[in-house]
Length: 207
Image 1 (cartoon, rainbow, N blue to C red):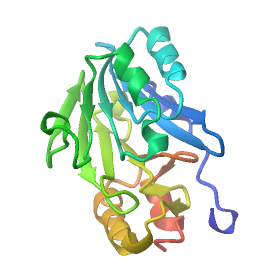
Image 2 (cartoon, one colour):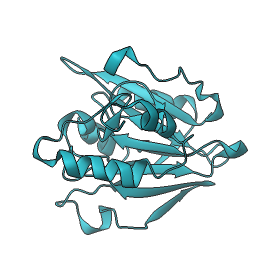
Image 3 (cartoon, rainbow, N blue to C red):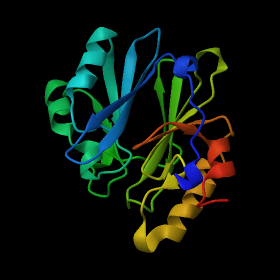
Image 4 (tube, rainbow, N blue to C red):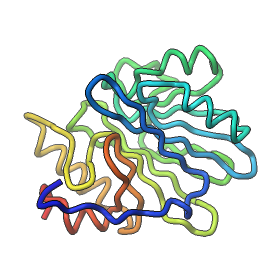
């Protein structure tokens, strides 16, 4: 994070049905996220991280029914626990923008998924990964701001490496993420959560 800047330490109490799950590989950590509807107990998982057990524990503790698994991109650290999850929960609907994904699993523009009262939409954010996608979860109880699960498109004070596609990556972040309201919570694949407003004001790749 440039110049020692850190995002505001954010209380996630506004989003009572959102849980970040951080698991560790051999050299780094990765985040995935579980959300659910407080009434129906229907849940959605965004990426899998390295270890399925913390996910299973949260599902069991909160008496949830996992209905959807959304993949932000298919880099190994984000889907390492995919097979154990699909083995234990074979009816979970998979969503991905990977070119080799079956047609019935592939994200389409303007798709939206209802999870109880929550509404989930997708926005293409390639650059770091060819199949990069951001999922926006809205219609939270008590008018909590929307949540954008961005994978490795952008981090607090940084962005995912994009090599030859850096210009595309930046443009997609501006068009698809920074166009969201400033109080939108950004949930990245690595590091702390942040907001659209904080990143527009402080991220050195964009200021």
